[in-house]
Length: 476
Image (cartoon, rainbow, N blue to C red):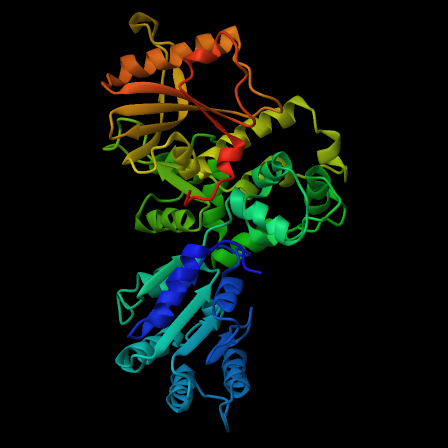
């Protein structure tokens, strides 16, 4: 059963109903459900379907392609000598097909591109010289190697330049989709537990498929990550090796970013990793962003300055916090459930989940139709100017001349603003107004797990967003 992916399904169905041939590239990180999305959308019915072989050699890839043609119903298929001949066989098969709309699905295309294979040349010849001249072909290519497809196909400067008609970068599930996914498996789990799971592993469907009924999220996390035979042991290495052909430099970047909660600018990352700050370095950042591993943002009032790159992938951050040098206790997560270190992790992880669900926050605030800019803001203390020194991780700058300063607080109960925290909030607002010189109205927004306890300090808060609001679908 396909959960969510309504927008992506609409793209695919629209391509199928178009009056011309379409060339679609579907890409995204490993385990995010790309193949399942395509197969479910087309009800597992394709004129031709093929998947590249992981670590297959040139001749193995060609033989497998011929086998797929035979399985699709092509008669007398001989193993091709090269990719040009392989695609000529595919052209002949398509030309003889009685299907009104020919859907051609080639999965893990990057695996087929072995050294000196000329696969891409054959692919561009197939599209430019055959498929695009017809009106009845939907060509879908898919891969987890995002860097490969961006460089080789989507941003190609040669024969495939601007040939892809539809790009579908598939992102992980949001909280709403994770909840629906568990429901589809008849797993009953409250939203506090689902939120904890999301903070640890994000919204990758493959990971959520390991959740076992009858166990708490804490027990499931132990089984997946800390048990002696952990279900996802080694996942980190597989993940980055599948997305990036040479993952070493990408891992250097994310490892540097994992040390900086608020992120770093390009120059800072370059100095930390000793990677040259050139065009290749910029492409690596773009590829990490396209996969959803990092996000790019500007600080409030500093759009003309360099963007900040922040590691936002929950699983990667969880790995560097707990799994790079894993504890030996197979019940580690259960035994540390109320430790100060665990509470500190939960606070930071909840902030990250809020940033990933900013659209739901805007919906709750009733400003989904207002043009906004999301950023962060910080300032150093300066006693001479009456500046206390503040940091705000989410600032929603609205075109209706209102600025929402969002404070994210993880709590097991309704959050209670203390006298000390009330003082800090007032200092933050004062700093923001004095330093930025904004003329907009400033609204204080608290994003918390369950809600805000009403007391003599809570009246200073203009709006409250709860975890339940983060679980809402984005179209509401």
